[in-house]
Every structure is written in C-alpha cells, then in structure tokens.
Image 1 (cartoon, rainbow, N blue to C red):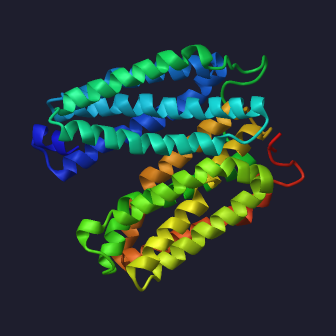
Image 2 (cartoon, one colour):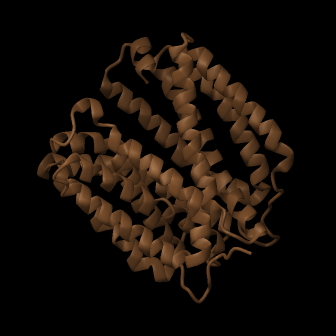
Image 3 (cartoon, one colour):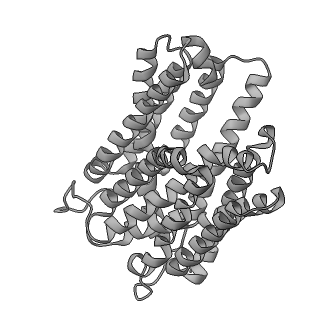
Length: 355
C-alpha cells in the first residue's frame, strides 16, 4: 500500500475506498463459492481461484490509476475469498476422512504463511528488489505450490439430490454469528491494538505493534497444539474454555497498569481465541440443517464481514466514548461463545476424537 500510495499520488481517503473494493470482491465471491463447490467440488474451485490469485497479484504492483487498482483489488479479493472458502470446505472433508481433528493445524499453517510471506517480501525489498519483482516471485511460488498439490486434492462433490444453494438457518445462523464475533475480535486487535496501548501510555509509538505480534505468535503456537487438545477435551469444552481465556485476556488488557501485564494479556487472548474458529468450522461441516459446504461458505463470509465491519464499528463508538470503552464491547460479545457452546457443540454428539 505505501508503494501504491506513492505511485498513484492519492490520499488516505482514496486508499480506504480502494481497500473497500478488496472487501467487496471477497464477500461476493465467498457467497458464490459455496454453490460452486457444491456443484463442481472444491478441487476445481481451489485450482481456478489459486491460479487466478497468482495471475492477479503482479497487477497490484503496476496498476497506474485508482480505477485500475480498484478493479485489480476487486479481482484480488474475489480470488482470495473464493480460495479461502474452498480450502476450508476441503479441509473439513480431509478431517472427516481421517477421523481426527486437523483444522487447528491447518489454521496454524495459515498463520505461519502470513509470517513467512511478510518476512520473505521484507527480505526481498531489503535486498533491493522492487515491488513488481517481489510479487512476481511470490506468484511463481504460488503456481508451483498449486501444481504440486493438484493431484493430491480430494475430488469432493455434493451427493445427488442435495441443493446447491440454501439460506443459513438453525444452528448455522448461531455458528455464523459466533464466527463474526470471533473474527471481529481479531480484526479489532489488528487495526486498533497499537493505538489502544499507546493511548493508554503503556508503550511508545515505535513499540505499538508488539502486542499484536505476541497475539499472533501465541495464536499460531496454540493452533499447532490445538488438534490434540480438542481431541482430548471435545469441541464444547474448547469453545467454553478458549473463549473464557480470551475474555480474561481482553479484560486484563483493558485494565493493565503496566506494559508487562498488557503483553501477557495479548498472549492470553491469542491462546484462548486460537482454536475457537477451527471448532466453528468443524461444527459447520458436521451439522445436518444444510449442506456442509454451503454452511462453511456462510460462516466464512460472516467471519470476513466481522473483520471488515467490526473495526469500523469500534472506531465509530470510540469517537463518542473513547477507544478503551469501545474495546469493552469485545469481551461483552465474546461471552456469547461459551453461552452458545452447548447449542453449537452438544456433548451428546461427541467431538472428533483422535484414533
């Protein structure tokens, strides 16, 4: 974005509008990906959206007008959103075939990919390469990864007679709402945590990103150990205790008297929230109210909407009551997760157990 800002000579307002194109593209694509995956299976959707993403990525570095960058971001968001939904549907199928929890590990690899991508591009830029060269290298690596995974992807397809579209209903609506809340919390930390802890006088501006960094690291580590823990305690207990730990972390953060306590709070939030989302995806895949692929598409879309709209809502509230008070909305919303755990993951149905 800094390179695009300089190349196009636009202000933050125009950049905000352009980034909205990214969100719109993702949300629209997510809505249709469930239907496409249901009709054709996730394998072709993953491949088409993955190769499309690799093709669109370099254009982000060369778009020369706000219009062309907006169109590029729209396509980039669409391919990224479609890939996200299709991979989650596919991951649920893989987990179901294996018969033990795997989703936390998959989401952990997603987080690890974020770290690796940021570090890799930073290294390339530091070595003197330009933005275009960096993204072309990234696209080539993506294409190679897709070619390598192509023959290993499952051939999934909806059973004969199942619909290719259905409005979310019943427990799927509850799962979707919880996904929106959980993603909202993560998006709020991404967008506002640096301003929160600097505004509280806990750290200088230069160290504002430390809290989110600790949150991300703890979340990634917790996800790599989350599958074994979930297999041991079950989905319902993971939802209850994970969300309670995250709530405690938010409360500790908002009342932190010194920086050490605040940093510990970020770690708690990451540890607690890490495995709630994988459980929600698993439960969306195992419910019987509607086809699992359509349910996963619905909760992915609402989750992404939470990331997009949640931080904006916090900013609106913060304008009237202050950022610290606005942040209290997050633990207040997160309390719905343990309250709804018995509905989403009743123990009578059992969790996926390690074999």
